[in-house]
Amino acid sequence: MNAVELTSVTKRFGSVVANDNVTFAAQVGEVHALLGENGAGKSTLMSVLAGLYRPDAGTIAVNGAVQHFRSPRDAIAQGIGMVYQHFMLVDSLTVAENAMLGQAGHGVRLHTAPVERELAELGQRYGLAVDPRARIWQLSVGEQQRVEILRLLYRGAKVLVFDEPTAVLTPQEAAGLIGTLRDMAADGLCIIFISHKLDEVLAVADRITVLRHGRTVTTVERRATNRHELARLMVGRELMGVVADQPQAVAGDAGVVNLEVRGLSAEGDKGVRALQGVELQVRSGEILGIAGVAGNGQRELAEVITGLRRATSGEVRIGGQDTTRCSPREIVAAGVAHIPEDRNGTGLIPSLDLQDNLILKHYRQQPLARGLFLNGAAIGNFADRLLSKYNVAAPSRAAKARLLSGGNQQKLLLARELSGQPRLIVAVHPTRGVDVGATEAIHHLLLAQRSRGAAVLLISEDLDELLALSDRIAVLYEGKVMDTVPARGADVGYLGLLMAGGAQSGAADHGRPMDTGGIINQDVAH
Image 1 (tube, rainbow, N blue to C red):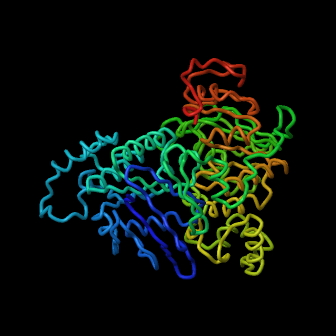
Image 2: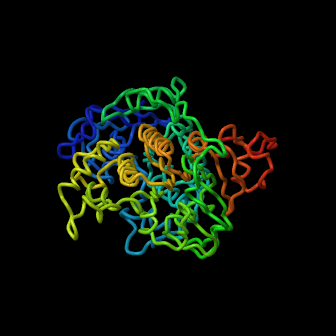
Image 3: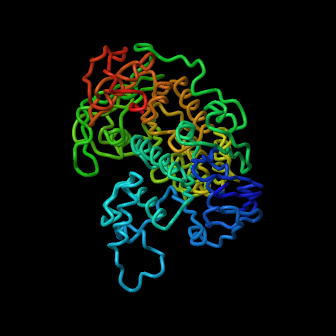
């Protein structure tokens, strides 16, 4: 029997149809993945199920009975809860107090001890251990997600919807969550997993429903499909792959040194040394990949190069010019493009419209400016040209950036940063949180910049991405470059060992296969 069933559901926002006659059913004891590109209607459909939105047409049935949800409270009363990407927790309250929020019957004084005991038992049962007395602000992001799950379980949820749950997690935390979801399904819960990440879906799901442009494409059994077929169903066409016969540069073949880092050290946000004597070079026509587990100095390296963080010692040279103490504006003028890891917090201004975001680097220059005034006609033409060239799907250039899907926001950011033909591109997790179609487009944009002669510093936690795009890969561990190896033919086991801090430079003859003793495998390296 289906735990939940949505039949012919339609949801509109003005003239935009987010869900168009969608039918979806998930069963007790399964993990059912809802897969689709950014903007395909996945989150909207599940927000209808969770009572956040009311459908314009169609029905919702829970255990065979039709329901009419007016709020999330109605949905949770029927055993349906949703864990959103952005957690709905009160930072100043404890874990137990957050679990009790919104519940009637607690009286004037809260008695948290029984709730704390129940949360501890649930945490032990499902491998979601967290201190019930801890305040939310004291917890890591992964622990806060556990609180969201425990809160729903405490309230009796039998159907749990996870909206892109791994987007905020480290690879290790993501792997742990996938195991937890499988255990919860085996215990008789119904798990709905919203994602655009094919590998995660294939790792966790029993069945997979694909949405495209707000409509149901198909539902398939996991064992009856594969990554290639799911990608085709998502985007409605065959994908070319990450790189199709793209020649990689070999040492000595690339051009002049566009970026040189010498003995670079810098502190992190907490005053602890994050970079220690980093040495690297990136030449014209070359992609240098930076690999490493999150938190080993990658963000600080990008910020020092782009002028957002001060170096404590060492030197950064761009195009032969010492830019170590230059401002971000001066570094932009030196021909540097920056694709930061946080596209909304650092890269874009979500409340501004698309054209205003697109001119942020160029608004002082002609023809966009006439003296002290902006040239509206030139700005409009400039924005329209970039939106078309980079295939940014948007109603108009006057739309707010926050209304775009994640993939289109990233393409908007790339359109601005690449528009001036930069000599150096610092790309930090450029495909994080975007779907397979947008990932393909971004990969080809970076390869086109390399072919044009730009130097690309590519920082990513996706080892497959680095191996496919890079000419060389440098591994950062605790702020140090452990080794730099050619990407072609690089041994994944050796790279994983470097990422774990378990090898020194030259230990495997720069990337040739080595015996790792079975302790490192590709999953760990990822």
